[in-house]
Length: 139
Image (cartoon, rainbow, N blue to C red):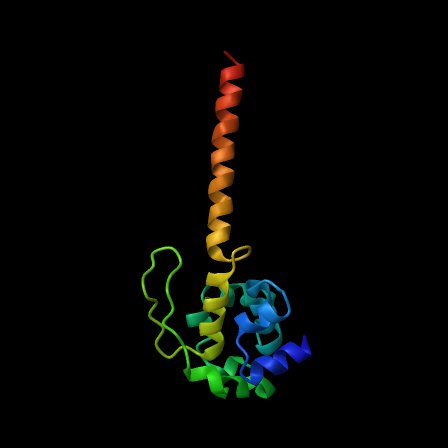
């Protein structure tokens, strides 16, 4: 993980690192947050859910990794789009780490919030089918 952190600090994006190492972007982003910030496990989960609020300050990043916020690509961002509504996300004063976490989780087809919501809906549909099947058997 240390070589990935080094590449991230030198300017590689989380998405490009995930592609390079063939690893899910959400999980890679979580690993980066766990290793670069002062957060404990529960706080990392909260930071992953709301990075614009939880990761807005550079003081939360360990001193050796603070250079990542000054990386060459840090100012070279496309506008972020909400994967559910398609609306542009407002992210004033967002750190590079926060922006890249949002980008990584929104683009992850397996572990991102959209995939999680889809799995939840499928589970609900199967529960409804099971309930209907059981009711039809009892008649």
